[in-house]
Image (cartoon, rainbow, N blue to C red; front, side, top):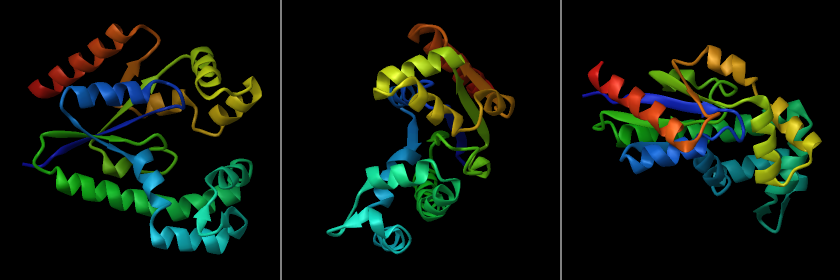
Length: 195
């Protein structure tokens, strides 16, 4: 039996983690690409490449991730370079996870930058968590303690949500309460079961 892989994505602070936690709670396997990206910094090959290309962000054998983040955030070329180092590791870990859980009927791949990193091929279906621009901005400011300008900058660094929604197989509307969010997921899972 081949496993069905559903990619889960959205914009920053749209509620993707809430959806992932709920799917976990229902007993589904959720592979978290953010977790793999964090792990990447412990990998010897990744460390060596970062030390080579971003020497100012490494000291005493440690990568200063905050310094690295500041360096790449406003520089598209540097950001692209860092992603070219991190993304292959993340993709390899996702492949491993998919192989490891091949006997499951359905697994979820939580990939915040699914479209930006061109990882659509990993998925049989794509779900996007959608939220109004105003609510997204408000949540991001509150969650990360950012100024409005900082929050807007982060939101604008990602693909617009409407573009992600246009390419989704299923859009989860997170403008309501949790009960509404969970109900949409339950209905979709039920429909998938009967497909």
